[in-house]
Structures are given as structure tokens and as C-alpha cells.
Length: 201
Image 1: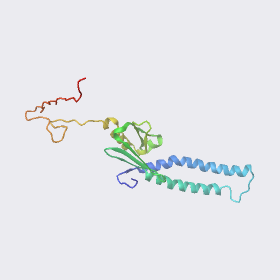
Image 2: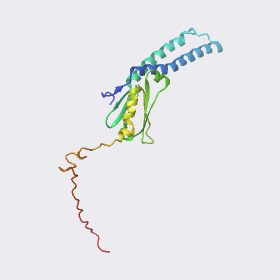
Image 3: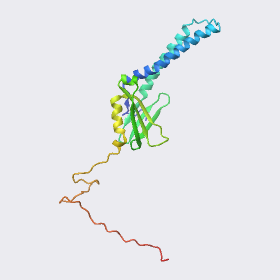
Image 4: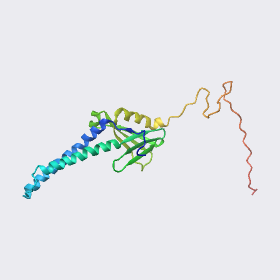
């Protein structure tokens, strides 16, 4: 399941957008650490052997390195696949997650895009099913045109389209729906008499 081929990866723009999106939180966290380090030294008058800038700087480098590496692994783990029966997604670095949505149970499909996504021509696909307890499936940072195409293919209207039979072809393989005169070949059906085993009351 995890190593199956045929899953479509997220575009390269998705990695950049995800790093920008989470990079703001990393920057805020580094600033908070630096402020706390300085506050502890001033308020409690602690003379640490480490200079005031070194500890936050080392922690920031370690945190940014781990964040840079983790975002790439998370981006590589994402994939999606659409076949005739289901829409499938897989994700997760440490804990692997696989989700499959039967196409005949799709009730609502939407495409959303925030300002950062729109600047990179990306969008988020949301697929909701008929089950009340079934969570919606979100695929973030798809190409906008891919998200729109999946929305059209997964929409209930597209899944409920019936096959039109015309030109004298039958809906049942191996049978002709009309005879040589172009008229439907309808044989009378004679019902068998029903025999009851019940006795007279």
C-alpha cells in the first residue's frame, strides 16, 4: 500500500508553500526563546557561562534544520490516486495514513485556496462522503487545475451519469434490442399459474 506505484505526488510549489506557511511559526518560536533567555538572565540576575546570544542561536539552527528536513519528508509522503472505484490518498512520515473514498458515496466536493496558495497557483480539494461519521478528505496544495479536474470527476453528478443506449444496441451484451424491421423484439410473457398449498379454511 505504502510503496504502490501510481500515486500522484504533490507539485514542487507545494513544498515551498508549506515551508513558508510553517516557517512563520518557527520564526516566532525562535524569537520567543531568545526573549525568554534574555528575560531570565535579567529578572533572576543569572550569570550563565553561555553568552546570551549563543544558546538561542544554537537552538534556532537545530530547530530550523529539523523543520527543513521534516517538511520535505512530509511533502514526499503525500500522494493521491483516482481510479474507477475510489479516490485514495496516503500521507504521513512517522505514522502512515491511507484514506479511500468510494466514488459512489461522494456527496460534496469543493476547492478552496488561500492567498499564499493562489500566489503559487495551488488549491485544496475537499471531498465529503454520505456517511455522517466519515471525515472529509482534504488534499492541500494541489495544482489549481488538477484540483478543479478532480472536483469535476468526483462530483456526484459526474458519478451518477447513466449510459445511454442507442442505435439499436441492447443494454444487455449479446442481445439485439430490435429485429430486422427496426421494431423492438418483444415476446409475450406468459405467467405460470400459481399453485397454493394451503387448504380450504
